[in-house]
Image (tube, one colour):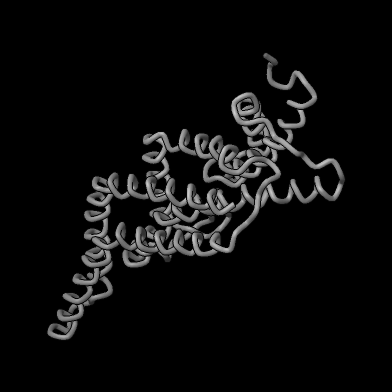
Length: 257
């Protein structure tokens, strides 16, 4: 029995495994964040690829010509990109929920740059996203990433990728699930603040002397924070369902490649 990277065949297989693993790790949430040094990402990808090399099936019928190698590397990178995008779509549901909630509470006026994505975000959105990631990792979500990665070499061997038309529909379904989950998470605050604004509107019409702008902002902020705490206390089942949906979606995608 050979140790990893002891023979030329293993080195060749390691290279192709590293292409798929590296693409996925460079694009995953947290692991692929912009504020994490590229050297760390490359090192983690290298270690995972070494661990997987003796475990997954040895690559067969590898390309030997330059055009074949370029096409194979492109296919592997595209596969990693599709899997990473699917994972990001599901986890983006909490960001979308945070944007909904912060807009209704008035936090959209105080936005900053999110160091992970480089886009404009606010404190509430970043907090619920990081909180969701912590719960996700407490559910062994990082182990799920590695299992999916290892199973992908059984479902879709190296240099045997064939993208089917159903991949686009599966990504659309993932986007629909993201929107649905985001609405479910933000629904309590959206409904509560809608009723609050409705009551404030009635007060403004019946008692014009009341400065609704000065009264409404702290009222909506207080109500929003109360419901935000309640959401955090009951978000675990939604994150669990999100993880299960993510796994099923990734398995279906692997079946379409």
